[in-house]
Length: 477
Image 1 (spheres, one colour):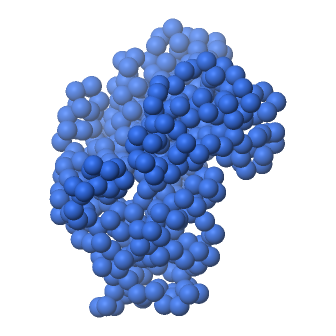
Image 2 (cartoon, one colour):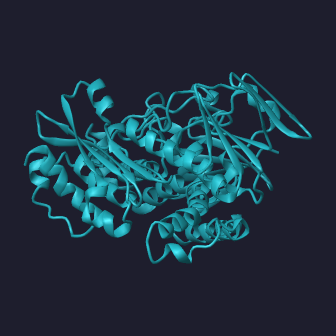
């Protein structure tokens, strides 16, 4: 017997942090909302990415900070306790139990549907779960928030490599770990497992780490990883891979690398392959391209997409921003009678909710040692975009606040200025505890604030935020 249709005003496919935000915002004008999730409510960020990875990085960061401060250094004896670090990670990941997240979903009136969703037509889906198959219909809108999955090169698929999920949830420390990739995941997990005692070798296809950041950021992280005992091979690709009882054997231009595990950190791609997109004339496996209201451009106004699945963003915080925008658009467009009457007359009263942030203002933090944080353009990307810019650099070690953190504090900051307008279009910070500097820079970039105006925002003394005063002085104010 075919499953009986269940109808909701809005269906959100994907119950991670991004999908939860979209569902919450969409429900705020009285729309009935179903949230579909095949695994754990809370998604990748809560259980296999942001939260567990930062929990694993934290012990090494704290030990390094203590060792850098006279009066504390002598109290530090030994390295990271792997079993205690894993136990704390398990707590942060809620023991991979989503009961707390489910309780929140239910408390705000959203209907949770467990299972894997596939489109069967416009606004129509089937959800295959443990209790069989359910047919769902959306009266107004479907929002896709299925995120992304790790990209595994063909040459490594046969050796059952780790992805970020395995690296952040493992309870074992491999004696030898090969990391393929030099981006955020590769850098952070190389740091984690070096702290835990693995002999780590990074195989990087390009010529530097963190290629999306300013070159000096990748150089600082490279030097720190090498000091930590990590071997880094640049310009290297794996040409063959074999797993046997002795581990994984990777053939590269440098020779054969023997490892107990290999972590693939070579990028991610949109999770759309199993959504049945062919039923709505879209390409399975491809990102869902959206406009500034997060509407899927090829679908005619009822389909929205948010987060990684759009191919526009790769961070939880930016995905949640997408979700708030899309949820507000849906809530205003379909949940308010006055708005709907205006829409029928050709107006778009929900246009005030359209996204205004773009890829040039997305903040990014890498919790390596040293930390790397940036927002907006690098000097290179700004010039590529045709903006006449100048870079204003400052050595963070010269700040009084830095000398309080550690007598040998090392860090660097760069502001990218649009010289014609005098506004901040990008900023990068490298050094211990610089992540907390980033939001001020994000406000400056998104707000297109002139540096001359920022001159009057007085930073507290002695803190790292005094760099903003030094930026102004260095720029000639």
